Image 1 (cartoon, helix red, strand yellow):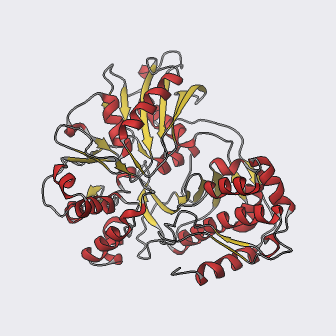
Image 2 (cartoon, rainbow, N blue to C red; image 1 turned 90 degrees about the horizontal axis):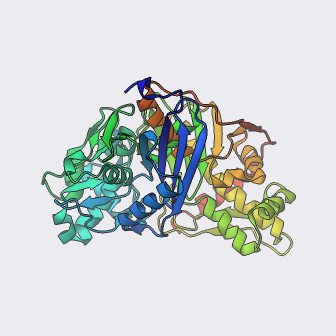
Image 3 (cartoon, rainbow, N blue to C red; image 1 turned 45 degrees about the vertical axis):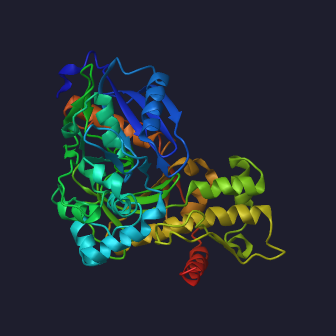
Length: 473
């Protein structure tokens, strides 16, 4: 498509972000990026969700955003990995297993071993399989719910399914996705942009022909709504955030949301046999090596409950404490952990005594523990040869001045904090504008702050010692 659809430069596009906790819709001017209106709705808690809840929430969020009747293009982006299984009639067979559902950890280990080991799997799909990947969940289903597995006619990811529903199609052949989201399934080769049907069949324990979403180019129209509005290919949440931030090769984005992620835009692919770095693709033809932790902003949520204070007060307390929190060190594995791969782990507070048991030290230790996990993530990217020139800090927790200041100290380098925004939804809107205009839009969405604090290498040293001591717990 081209700019001929613009009317006085006022054409609007919609970006949709269907995340773990909620769905956001942003309506922006395609040419300037100006935010016109927005809407949101909550999702139920849990790691196993009926996709109907996503559809109901999306419908509410669209209504909250004033509807889509005046938009000229739409893009849907969503949380990666989630397994949506459909029968031959297009009906959802069972609730979707989400990325944070760890019951498939042993299934992932089985698949890696059956395929020939971690190195071979990493070379095939860029990643060693862990519980989060769709392939692991397919194997879990085959082992634990064989009758449901026999009903499968198609497997979709959350964004694929929502875009398909938005189109009104009932045909499984209309399911489509992009290489960015597909690269998180565990049965897709992002170097050749093709599915690994052999790995999918191994996961399902069946050679039956199953519909997998077609791969659509990032700047192409994938579907249309029933009223004729073009729907772009969409992508996964991290790839969309990279678009929203206009991240370039050499940029590392540290996102502190429900999960913690550190991902880099890279011109070359990675294949980490240790499993720490997932070799994903981005939405535009580059690669998106990524490290994900299960524990990020929820660590701070736990801190607010423990100290019975609000987010702002929590940050103020943390900044009153000295680096190292008086000897307190937190290993923040409150919900198990994905990186390192310790699905059964729990959190550990170490070094507590009568003198350092203060509200200030506890707040500082919780922020430091969360960020030390992200420092490990950045180090993992560097070990894979990923270029790290700039670090951009985003996510709900990044709104805290304490978090950004302590992040710079923990990372030992300057941290850039973009203005608060809905980066995934904005990245989706930018993709929709790209499809509409026929070229990448240039948007200025606000000033980026530079944060530089004195490095505190002693904190990460103590953290890593505790991490290694507790391996196997």
